[in-house]
Amino acid sequence: MCCRGSPGHRSAPVPVGWKGGGIVADGTPVPVPDLNREHASGQDVIAADDDCEFCRIASGEAEAREVLRTDTVVGFFPLSPAAIGHTLLIPRVHVPEIWALNLGLAATLAHWTVIVADALRATLHPQGLNVVQSNGAAASQTVMHLHIHLVPRWEGDALPRLWPTAPPVFDADLDETAAEIRRRLGRGYTGWTSDHVSEAPPTSAKGT
Image (cartoon, rainbow, N blue to C red; front, side, top):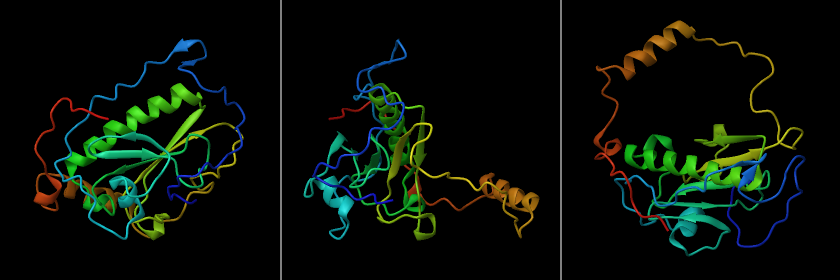
């Protein structure tokens, strides 16, 4: 699945069950998303990687079909969307993967993911929604700038199943693995560095 941005119009087949635009689903009004709420990221917002296509979109150098732009995040349609409404949400600062993500910016991305999901539901009335964030080539990340996919779903659409139909066999002991993860998440865990910690975000910030 390509996740590159594009300024050009790329039509996609209307999925089964799509009811069209509007902000009312099944007769129930859907609240308009509040685009003026945002957490502080704790990071600079200037794109620093000239070779990164998403940095060029974030800085405004490259065009894309944008649906959202704030001081810290940009939302846009990919070049080849998997479904109508498929949206990518990226930080404006270059962050290659989740392991380099500042906790303040993580909160901001989560905040806007919920708001964009609300806007997609209000506009397209999907039967479901996939929220996917991949890290590394083994997880199918093709652009090394952290991004979140929001993909509206309908029964019978063209997207494949995400999870295996048969449970895999693990070499590692699941109880031991869970215990080690608990240990690392406990008070004795020192894996976090100052790069991952930011001040508590304010309750609101202006979005554009």
